[in-house]
View 1 (cartoon, rainbow, N blue to C red):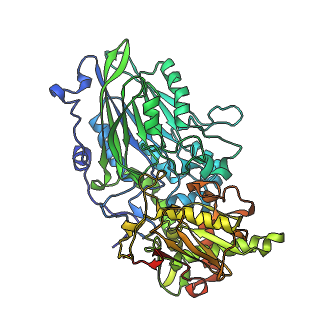
View 2: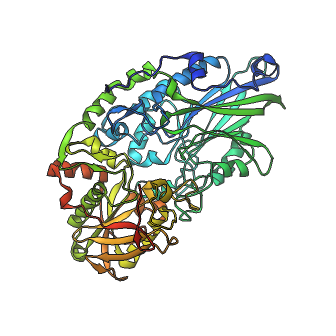
View 3: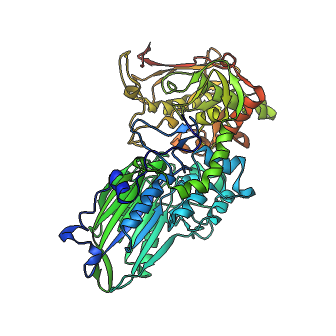
Length: 608
């Protein structure tokens, strides 16, 4: 039976917790049977790291009102990670240790949303992530791109509640080019019978913020490239006498950009930083939501092997980086390095963290389970990537209706279209009562609504771009979903994510089209019609889009430069919640229709 506070999966602590979590004793430290710290002229620095916590304190799925679980039986939440952190601190007692985070802290769960939008910390009260992270004792955290989702005032309020700095060497003032957040920290460790150890920690955030949160940062902050800023700041840290330089980077290890060439700086650039900027010893990697226990990248100038480690997101893993040091010219240098990630699913949550956030957690549980309306039938998002389903039609209907109501002057006569993507395949509306969490589970991102004026040709081009989501296959199947979706592209080497697959629907009349995935990208959208007639290239429409798309997110054509005809800064998730609250009944017969289908050489295909 589910409870509002996650139940225990284990009660392991200390060394037993580490063993259960997959901890492997550092082989380098064990050479000769002695830790390096016990050898004259040698020392070990431990760097512990988290990243992409996304507002997860507990092992709790607010959308399911149950403990979190997935196919791999991962657990989530910083409360569990703290048990591992405490165990590592005990295991490394007396040795120098750093606790870092690589960003994306305050967005991603109803817990985070509630204290940003429903009961914002700008009106008083402390953010639950601040309560938790202060107890853990972080030395520093790097800004993630999602830190900017709720605006700079809320971010600054959160920053003021922390006992540690938020770093961002490449979040700069447009006029001066100087960082508007601390670029680094320098941590000094006393070493018995040896020189003090001086470690610089440089924080680098993601250049994509300039696109993804354009409305919040334009004219106020700029975000140059990670390599370019590291080239400025690493030498300064070395001149300040730092023996070691650690980078905490909210930027993936595999070089790529979801925004294509919209910016001159790559989105995922941690390996480039390691390759091109000398004198970096290790990088705590974030942003990509992958688990990289250990990777070495050789610096092109010095040949030094730079250690990269990325722990899995939401608190599933804790990064442990061991840097073994030797005396060198009156200071210290890295002799060898090793890293691993520890699984949090074997341990109990830390009860100090649980107590610190318990009240806020229960408050949010009550909010998300409040009934706001009902649905006449069950609606599922599970097949949204391969067929037109009513639950996505619902998003498009509400968005298009809001834009239509807000159009003025000559634009008021424009036919209205809307885009939507399947953000969460697990989303569903039950037949019967619908709660806040049902709607929040459908629209999991913190986007706002805009309307832009586009031509028929631009609609065609937009859809063609979106359909690169599909793999090229021939024949009518049957195919599995994995065989046709999430195609690998140059901009998405790990597969195009679901959130970059947009379908388009009409409001007062149907927009219909076929998607022929036997064809090459760019020639897939067939029979595009509005109200039964072919869409003329010079036809004009108002297109409801989210701010992520309109700012250039995903690199979709036209919408970032098209004239804006509607922009009231309305949060789309809240718009959907308010619509259900006002109308009380969700009836798919009012808005749902099958407007697009997958075909192969003109023949419908079967996807199981």
